[in-house]
Image (tube, rainbow, N blue to C red):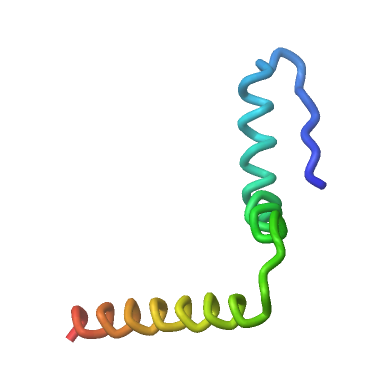
Length: 67
């Protein structure tokens, strides 16, 4: 769990912004969303397959633009 120490003279808003940034880097929010409900193994496979297709399609588009 990331922690932030408030420096002398630092505003609470700035410290909160630093904390949020550290949580985002650590992937806490995405992990929380992922575990918020049960996902069947078939749904997980389907989600991973569609993500792989999107990634491949994006890569193909990027390669065609560079040629």
